[in-house]
Image (cartoon, rainbow, N blue to C red; front, top):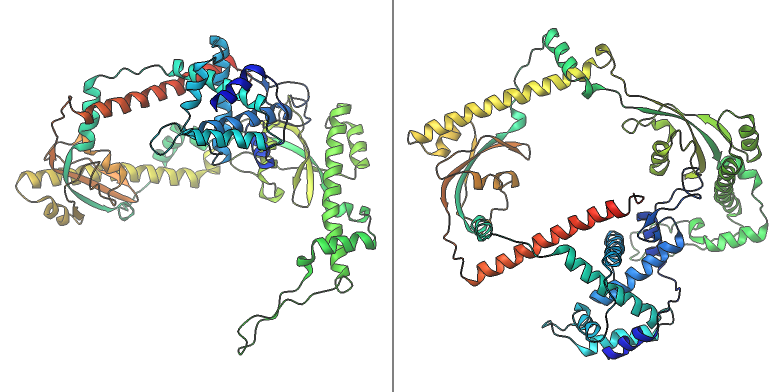
Length: 548
């Protein structure tokens, strides 16, 4: 059965375009090939190369997607869980194939291909052994579906073989000292007996008096915190659906068709059932004649939005084609031809975008992609209208005078002072707890005497019986404390904590037993994987600098 694919691979090296699921293609286009449109920066004039693929080319995007889809199915027997997994896998696959090409890794031949196929988890049983039936099902599914071609699949399998070889070379073998493994095992198996004291951080509310000199000094030393961010000044051509309502062509046949396609929108809800009725009444069927005016209004609104979007797109292309710029009379003439208006926008920053513009996320992002080298955007739909943006200038960051931002400066000064006083309070509380415990008082009694809430925990390790209600910030401090020590104040989850290490039992680790060997192997694999990931990222940055 493996021979079938091997023979096909050796004899056929052809591929056939087939249609992938639209959702996968669309997701890939938007996730990976976020290509600008007709703007002058690079949409129509430049490539975005990534190891031989043009990432702004829909055709190349589809080819990448097709190969990733087959590869995932061959490797695991399953599809992608989500778009993020899909795009990550597809990009990494291309990069490792580029590495394989550089290393001149040959295609598989003979027993190499057989061994490679037998090693895929998609064809393993529950015991991890090769299952011929699973492999045969894969072959049968490929041959049964006309959109698949065994020659194309063979190409993908050959690529996956070379990718695996390249990945293994990039990953290598991680070198670990036995001491590193022993320390990791000790961390997981050490048993801790702890007590915790805490108070609500918000309850600490000291009175803070602010001297004018201190406030001025704080402002001078922290001007960067109060700097107004750079702002983009722009205008936009507005194409409102309302301005295209009268241009919608309407006739009775169109309205009736629209009514039938959207009947539910015009069907009133059924009346509420009477008290003595168990089931609600059926909704009353309405006729076209009863709701004709509503149908026409809805039809005109929907079509007017489309006309506005089309006019905006055509206008944007005219700007590109005629190399029009803001301030030219010809731009205004063309804008009038497409029934648009030119509007001025307030200066906008990423932190403070004018809410009165009611721009969606796509339009907001487009504002800040513009600049001197990209003076206008593509057409963007925003609800019932479409816009084309025009760049004017960028206002650089500026530090306002103190009187303009006095309230904010005072608020941040108070917060900083509160944090300083809170830290002092924490040190004073810790000194008190340490002194009382050293004098023989229990930690809980010493904590409660200062108004803190005390809690003790049963012995636990990071691997067994770990408390669910112990904040992660406290778990991170366990390794630092010795028996009898009290931590400095730790802030977490709106509370401030003190951690008392009542007892700490560090186990003896046998470096000769099976558990140690298994831990060493797992840690080596993890470190090798991290090394491989770092390598491929560096490889991408070095070999594909045009890709962003």
